[in-house]
Image 1 (cartoon, rainbow, N blue to C red):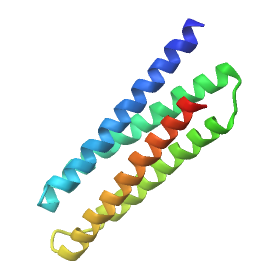
Image 2 (image 1 turned 60 degrees about the vertical axis):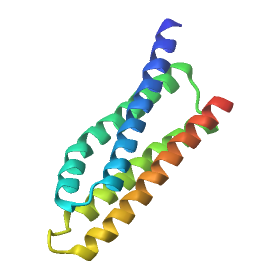
Image 3 (image 1 turned 45 degrees about the vertical axis):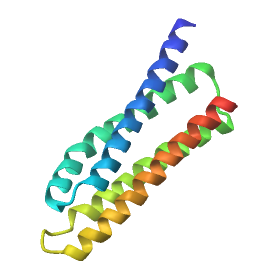
Image 4 (image 1 turned 120 degrees about the vertical axis):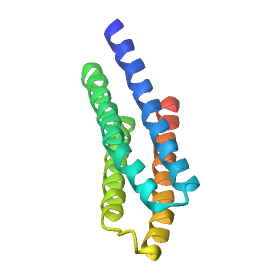
Length: 134
């Protein structure tokens, strides 16, 4: 049983790490005025974001497999992880085609990125609350 409790603890800490990265990225998008430094920061943070999300998925899979549990909560967690991954890929794809002279696209991207990070944070928090209730 120690293995399960350690796995759950690791899973919760990895969720916290992912949330910290999401909040950091949201604050970066909100506070930075220049697009080029913002794009460089987000380009650096994207692999860390995906690594943290992969760690959340991996530790969650270990816990679910060991406990032989495939409940609605586990399915919600899987859907949330896929949602977070897909929206982050969409955000990155939209960011990488923006040139330094496309000021309108830069402004649109900042609004788009804020919406993406807000949705991701809400989705992860909602899933975490649902998992604690059920």
